[in-house]
Image (cartoon, rainbow, N blue to C red; front, side):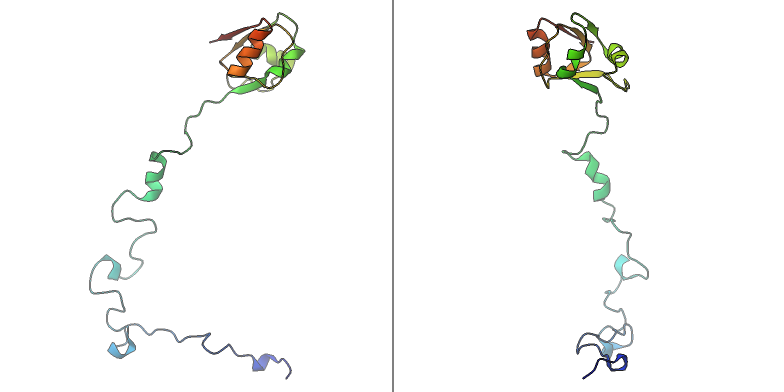
Length: 149
């Protein structure tokens, strides 16, 4: 048997007849069409908008008030690692402006935070908004000073 467009038919049971709602008791969905007698869900048009919970504060408005969601006003820092401070001269005063002049920091938009990745070989006086514990210990181990403001 060859394949011809005029011989195509859907499988048996693949296409069901449309329910004829509101066409009398014999149709099975007569009068109220399966929507019950009265009330909000029996009216014409969509009963309620998506996400409506009957006047209760809906989930999409409750969610940010719950725990474990990202903070809205997070503290942002300009970060630099201890290893990159090795390029500076021994005994230098280090702050955000001196790092910009040295080319170690490109955008001084936020306060400076010193991170502890790498090793430090030069003695420095570092002025920053924050230090990690490992960065503070590495700076002080070589005789440097950590000053927060």
